[in-house]
Every structure is written in C-alpha cells, then in structure tokens.
Image (cartoon, rainbow, N blue to C red):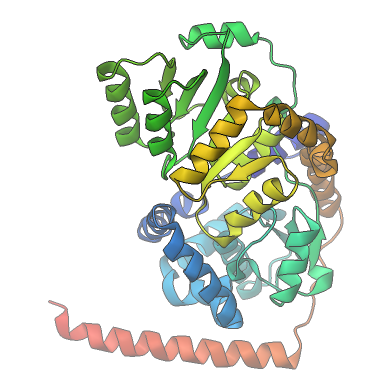
Length: 407
C-alpha cells in the first residue's frame, strides 16, 4: 500500500515522465516456493502473536546474524537467483523496496554485477521495527518516525543511512468522500441514526477481532457494526451465518476484502482493529478512535503504544478490559475527546503530504548519479566469515541429502 501511494503521487506530480512498476517481487520472478514460505510464515505469525513477539526479541538479540542479507543467503536461494535474473533483465534506475528481503535481493544483484542503481528500503513499521530491516549496504532505510529512527540506529544501522519521512497513505483517505454517510450506511443496510463501529483484522482477516464482534452483536450494543473480513473466507462465512441465524437489535454488515475503506471509515465513529501500520494510520487520518485487540508482534505493538500514549485509542488485552472500554465509550463523552486528540496530533497533520514528499525525494534521487562506496576491511572480513559459514552449511546439507535422492 505505501508503494502504490507513492506511485500515484509520482504519476500525479510528474505525469508521463517515469515508468513505475509496483510488483510482488518473489511472485513476479517465479520464486514460488520461497514466496509461499514467506507469506505462509506471516499468516502463521499473525495467528500466534505471543510467540511472534518472543521471536521478535530473539531476532533483535542476534543482531548481525538475523539481518535480512544473512537470512536470505541461508534460506531463500531461489528468490535470490530468480530475483537477480529479473533485475538484470529489467535494468532499473532506482529500487524503492517496502520489504527487507526484496531490498537484499536488489542489493545482491547490484553488488554481484556492479550495477549503478540506488536502493531505498522503506520500513513499513512506523514506530518500532525488527532486526531484519537493518541493512547498512543499501543507500538508506527510510522510516516514518523519530522513534523508528532511534530504534534502527540502536540495532546498528549507520546514522547517515537512516532518513525520517512520514508514512505514505493513498490520497483517497484525504480527499472529500463524494457519498454522504447516510448513503454509505443505507447501502449496507445499516441505520444512519446510530453511531457505527468498524471491525477489521487487516487484509488477511486473521486475529481476535471476530470474537468481539460476536459479543457485541449478541448484546444491546447501540451502534451499527461493519465487519471487514479481508481475505479470510472462513471468517466471512462464520459471521454471515451468525447474522442469519441469531436475531439481534444490532445492525450488522459483513464484508470481505474491500477497496473503499476510506468510505467505510468516513461513516464510522469507532473501530476495532489489529495494530497493523496502514490500518492504524488510516483510522487516525479519518478521526476514528480505535480499540486495538491484538498485534502480530513487537513491531506492531509500537503502533498501538503511539495511539494509547496520545489518547487516540485503547489497547484491550482481554475481554474484561474490552467490556470496560465499551462501557466507558457508551456512557461518557470519551469518544469525542479522543477524536479531538486525533485532530490536534502534530504527526497526523504531516500525513496528507507524506506520499508527495516521498515521490519528490525518489525523483530527486533518480536524477542524481549513484556513487559507489567502498566497503571497509572490517565489513569485507565479516562478509567473508559469514559467507564461508553459510557455504559450509549448504555443502554439508547438500551431501547429506544426496543419500535420499533417487537418480
């Protein structure tokens, strides 16, 4: 989503001047096995936030050994081979990457064939990342906040390789919605006379949000409920069945993957969500205070802390805390207070221009030549040592596996 937002800004600010392709890199190059592993692991992690949080801590503690360049060479050789081949054919003038593994592949291609394009890695975790984002060999890692900048520097990213620029969102979140709130709610079969709650677990639709939707639907909750299930078909069927089989005074609309989240948020007064980066910032720019029920790991917990610390949202760790928050929202004016806090927040005010600022930055970098930097002896020695270890591991594994091969 950040990449698509920047592409739109470049095409608007510099019409017809540049070819911009946004690709799902591993899938595009045909690294199907590695692509399946990477995406499958993320889905697995989303469903196990406590375990993933501990893994986050482990990643950070190993430092050099768990940076993306090392992890890629150990586990994702198919992606490296096919990605390098793709880049040699494509011949990019600049690479803007929103995933650490994609940054590494672009880097390996540049170093192996002495290519002359710049690589900018955009850390899509706005407040706190993880060690895989650290990559001193790219031209810069761009982050959204000063907190993220401080985190990366602590993990070993050189200070001059970290740049702070606000998080880019699609322009539709800042443009005036052409349809009225009543039209949007009527189309969904909801009551325009009620306040509206929007529940989402991000694009994958994985998490605890559904249990809270069920509870509110079966209660006397005085709001409409919009449940966005994303790509989770099982969740969509489950909530649809609930709506058909259980009578309730609470109006409920069950949706799958949507592309009009900006309209849905425009019609909403409150949200329940996972603490993902895009979701967190989208609800904030639409002035919708949010109850966060879960996050994938520490890097998403930072987004929740940002909202809670600035009194723009709540974090519910269990059902009792959730009930207390809902009771306060229903019986006090805290919702309006939190909306006011969002309006006054200085960081939120920077978001409307974020995509355009990044677009201008990329074009400026595109128009200036790439300067090759020589690596220090210490860095080269470390790369040789790590590379030797990795090659020995591969050789050992290859010989071992030959026993089970049928010619």
